Image: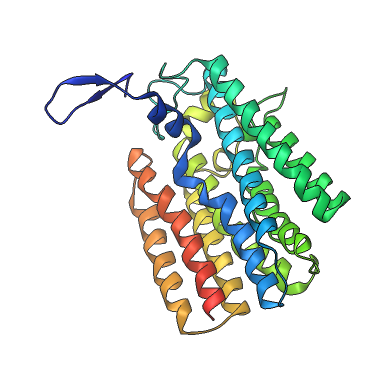
Length: 297
């Protein structure tokens, strides 16, 4: 991909600016920041007490943190030379010259700024625990691709995703609605949400292991090797599924069971290539289907 699109009539036309920014935001995985908020809201509603404003503002805050992290990662990886022409993953706007790196960084800071404004309202609702969660999330968003040891190049990414895109996000949402964030059901649902999110990261790192190793990264997929990283992806799907069945065993679990089996067959069948990109959105959809099955059950 370059700064032009191939039109239906074969004529090359400039890619619209809006599409470039949407590409940089990585919309295929934005559900990963929204599902835990909706899951926590569902638990609060089950308990008979929830607030629409808390849900909407929390979705804005978490979405902006994820978008800011994605944009900052896009610019930082281009600057470090991680995203090379032989990249197998989805296109990155800075490395391809679709957007200027400085502009992408400013947009990332803008997204973090909106998250802070939304977080101010959430802090008014939830007090110091929400302030702490928000500050840590912002720091992690920056540190994911920056600093002397970017988290994106260390073998801790999947654990951080389980923690913050799963347990912390669900528990924090429940707290905003006045519930007990440490209740067993809350923590279990956080893990149900978090394991598929970690599977998305494992999938990305499995696909990019050669390019990442060349750039000096030491992700879990690199340390484990291709066979074990495939097994870890399947294990993350299975762990989320098993916890979901434990929370709400019902006929509704038939759908995520089949979905997990389909994804597991694909990860073993497909070579390390751009073909793996089709599993990114599907793994995010599996998370949604799993949480819906738990709610319906």
